[in-house]
Structure formats: structure tokens, C-alpha cells
Image (tube, rainbow, N blue to C red; front, side, top):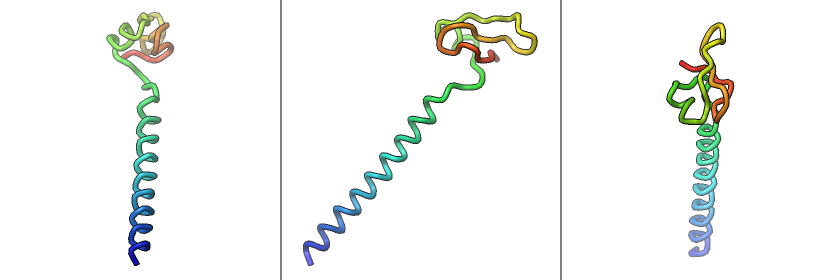
Length: 71
């Protein structure tokens, strides 16, 4: 009887740990996605320059956010 309780506790802990790791992986993946547009400060802080010659929106050139639109 005691062995069953111990095994049940081990399986429950393993299941909860698996769920925690899956959630952490999903959160990390979501955080690493680059945004569709950045602020002027984010562009320059990331090492880029703002190119205002584009027809619709200014674009960040160079640095971390290269090619992203600037709001």
C-alpha cells in the first residue's frame, strides 16, 4: 500500500514537472519572436538607423530590428 502511494506521488510530480517545462518552453518561444514594428528608440538602441525614405512607414535599417517598420 505504501509503495502505491509513493509511486502515485512520483508520477504526479513527474506530470506536473512536465507541464511546467512545456509551459516554460512555450513562453520562451513566444518571447523570442521579433515584433512587426518597433519604436524609434528600440531601433536606435538595437544599433539601427531609421530610414524615412520608404513610401509607407519608416523602416529600421541595420542592428537587431533590421527591416522592421518604425511606429
